[in-house]
Image 1 (spheres, helix red, strand yellow):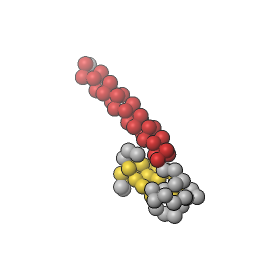
Image 2 (cartoon, helix red, strand yellow):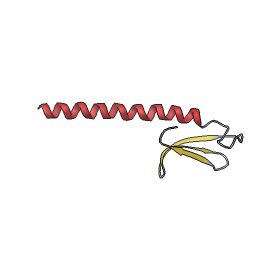
Image 3 (cartoon, rainbow, N blue to C red):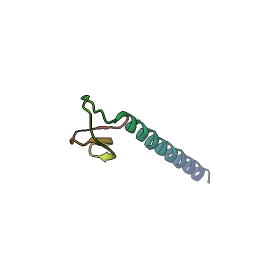
Length: 72
């Protein structure tokens, strides 16, 4: 019974940490990926997404360029 409680608490802590990582990472991505891209060019639009290949938060500008990072 004790092992089950420890496993459940561990899973809960891992779930909360993962949810926090995704939420804070998404906020940071929205902040970092503004309409001014890394080269200083002004863009008309930017889209935000999660990418599995390459792994991380991804922002793509209207000209097709983009950035991917696990932590912006």
